[in-house]
Length: 306
Image (tube, rainbow, N blue to C red; front, side, top):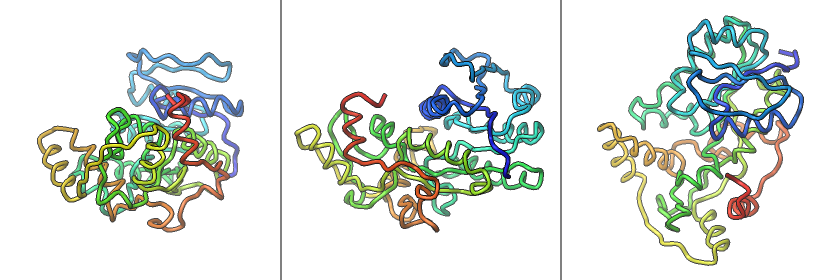
């Protein structure tokens, strides 16, 4: 796939990652961008001559129409919306789209221990990857991008056991295991790098990070930033797994957060992209900027990250 990617569709451009991707795309002035959103959505978007908005009923025919003459589709739907991805992929094939970037991000989906942990609740992610592979023969290429938790968003939402509102730290298995995290801006930069290297990234599942650190390393920087010690709690990944599965089996999705803690912080789930995955992170050959834990924490405390 040597053709330059110029025209693209962003699906889900108003969420946390979608907004970061849109900001990065607009900043380059290299793309003609279409936002695909639901007709019922009240989301607003920046005004730009390179940006158009299509409000759709999400029927297959309307999506195919929106994807006409597009080089790439970037999916930034949240967990509630990723059930639509199979339909989006089918529409991309029908419209002749060249590249599809699924809403992968997050956990290391292809690690054999990840999806069974959720007892079927996240199987759609592997179904999407399998479906993409089956479309290669039809001319569609794809790139899956694993990021680990979004570092900045994750701090605000207690995704890895560090609660900046209550100043409490839930250390999993001692809090010393390193795991890879990626800021929203670095995730967007990775997507732009993939678009700029269509041949090298075709039909690849790649890993990126901002840095790979432990809970205790992050906690040390947070305590230094605040000038106070946090309250510590200890929990094992086995306890979290038991509690999370029990809650999820009852339809209580707070259990999913406990299981995400296990995925990111426990052993055996491929969350340290510098050691646990073949080939390590793609930051170098993608040309991604270096980011620093101390700098990113400071940005959060001075309100540079929303």
